[in-house]
Image (cartoon, rainbow, N blue to C red):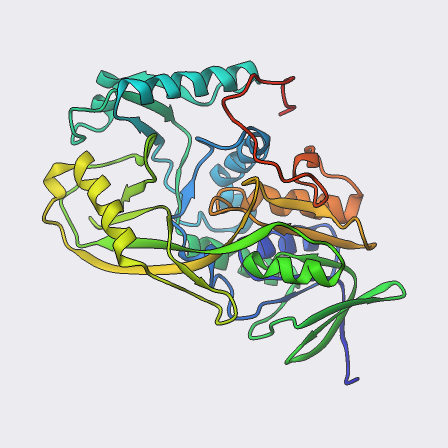
Length: 386
């Protein structure tokens, strides 16, 4: 074996969760090496819609999302950059009376759990917030302190902050094999071997393959998430928008362009390490936008792109210590909604790895859970701490 590069912690994956974890591990006093197969923010962390969204989260994620939202509002103090964060508010639109009733049930469910950040609003309030919306809307859910940010800028800012704390990044270093020898973990890459006392797998859609090397099977699969951006148009929309009855993530930037997403599933090529755009599916999303904003009917699409993300069977991430090996940890499977969680989850992962426990409960995200999908409309259980 050639010379092995060593640290206290190896992080596999240079997305937002890997870079945030690396920063917080370094802040906790650990020496850290990050191994990235392509380049930092190449996949879901650099090509997502940028939603900083607590709205619509699965109940187990809400404490993490609320913690992370406070960090987003304080990002310049944490990493020296605001990541392009705009606290635009997020609005989930109802288009029928049945959808408005679903919104009412959702807000009631959260209140039964002790959460009050999602507010039910009527049609008049929706149209007062966004006058350009089609008049058929019936109401929705409003979260004032949500917003959006710039994914590549944010992830790069976390990387620079981590490097400022001594974290070493190695790009073009896909990990082919992990193995534990005595008290140390080893990772094999085309750039040589790396070793550390602790190992974090935060490799997005490729994490399941690495977990399997440790004897842990996770029901996770890759998807190609798509986005498109339009030509410039006069300002008409301030909030970040979603829809109740169909997939949508929608926002207008200051330069007039509109970014359209919303878990638009494309084609994921895991071995080839890239996502491909499915234009027929983009047509459906464009139709949703035109239904809500008829004046955009003739607006042109400037470009479309796709990234690769990991989805679990129960739509919750894996944030967990290994159950098969010592000093092995996981943070992946964020199902297309992990961007907002990046700041807080990085801190919680560092606490889990360095202190033995995180400051928020992570039991719902254990790697050995049942992965049975949760019915968000079911009768609520005891309130989740937050």
